[in-house]
Structure formats: C-alpha cells, structure tokens
Image (cartoon, rainbow, N blue to C red; front, side, top):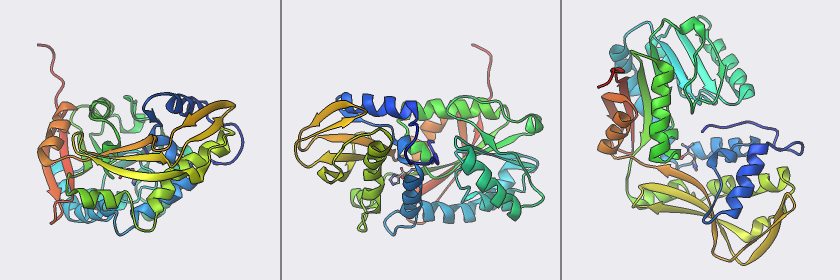
Length: 325
Ligand code: AVI
C-alpha cells in the first residue's frame, strides 16, 4: 500500500527497506518516514479501529455511496468484466461491488500474501460461484495480470481514498500504472476524499479517543522493536495539520523537548518542537479529481457523492493509447 502490510511486528530480522527508510528519514531535513511503515500487525489493528471512529467519516461515507452507486456502475460497466482490486487488504467494501456487478472473476491484489489469502478465503465462502484469483504484487508499477483473465475487460477498484496518501505526482504515476496493468477498454472505480472545512478534517485525523495518535506513535514503537532503537515514546506527541496550500492533512510526530536516541546503533538528536512527518492525506475538489484522473490516463464518466459532499466515488474509462503524434 499503499495498504496494510501484515507482519509479525516482533523481534527477528527487520525488513532492510524499513531500516533504510527510517535511517534516511531521521537523517534528512525535514525528517520524514513513508506512511507504508505504519501497517505492522498493531498498526493494521489501529487502522481498523480508526475506520469505526465517529470523527473518521471516510469509511462509512464511502460505503453508503457504494451501496447507492454500484447498481449504476453495473449498468455503465456492462456484464462480463473481471474486477481487479488494488491494495485489497481485508476486501471489506468489495461485496457491495461484487453483488451489483456479478463479474466473471475477481482479482484482489495486495503486497501482503498472508492477508490476501485470508480475505480471499472469507470472500469465496460468501461468493462460492465466483472465480477468485488472489495476486500478490506491488501495484505501484505496471503488472501482468493472471492469464485466465487476459481476454476479459477489466474493472479496476481502488476504494478508501488511498490515492490521497500519495503526492499528486506519484498519484498520476500510479493511475498510469493501473491503466497499463488493466489494458484497453478498462474502467476504474476509485474513491477520493473531498476538501472540506478544516475542523472536520483535523478531527478526522486527531480523534477524541486518541486512536489516531496511537496509530501514529506505534510507528516509533515499531522502530524501537524492530530496529533496536531507544526512542523515548513519551517525548513525542501526535499532530494533525491541514496544509491548505497543498490541500492535504499532514500527520507529524513532534518532540516535546530536546532528546537523544539511537536507531540500529546510530545516534540522533531532535530539538523540542521538531517533527517527523509521517503521512500525507490529500483531498480533492470535484475539478481537481477529474484533472487528476485525466492526467493519469483516465476519462471520468460518472461520479457520486454523499448528501454533504464529504467523499466522492468516480467511474472512469481508460483513455485509448494513440500512436504519436
Ligand atoms: C489509508 N488512508 C486512506 C487513510 C487516510 O485517511 O489517509 C490512513 C489514515 N491515517 C490516519 N487516519 C487514517
């Protein structure tokens, strides 16, 4: 992920990429660690808890939009497609789409094989007639989908506003990769969170129960556990800030006072007030979303929102590949 990567989260060999990202992230200015490292087992549990919070409107709002929109999606997409879900995770919203579209096949793609197999098993109990082809892959780059669906037109599914966790430049790269992976004639159903008043946005990422704070701080606990680090957790606080210029919520971990610690034997210091930037969650107005889709090689064909305009779902079709000029 972009999406939850389930790992032991215990001792044992740390992922070399995790070590490299953390060491580089603490050494650079401003300090920053990629958000994908939130999702060890504890982080994934905390994210699930976030999706149930009263302040975190995106999950329940998108679910309601899907319930209303999926019959129309089925009409617009037509029969005989294969649904390909990117970063399927627990496939929580998938049954709504599968029931409406009745696809020829369902291909959940996730970077975590264990998670993928677990959720595919659960889904096949619910849809015993459906051909389910779990596919373990990093979908940030174009991928070759299973041969069994080579001749079938695809309907990509990317719910959750996970696209918002990428910078616009990376989001365009991802949309282009999806178009390359899904091929000619493909369609894409994608959720994007909308720009709205600052208070609603900040509360969604800084809830009263402190679950999002625990999710953010768990990254430091994971670094201590897996990279033999000595970061004093109680010397940090969670911050959620609306960056209006970039139309995004930023999550940071702020040092409360001057501190010194080691990570994998390397010494670091931070001054009180300094932060580590841990996540971006970009929000898109209706025009922004359509421009983003077009830049990524997709033509919007329909969009749905909730009565309060909090969240939006877009159906788009792959722009045909034209020979130059
Ligand atoms: C996974 N992603 C879409 C969530 C979001 O809203 O950006 C991650 C999240 N971070 C804090 N709360 C939720």
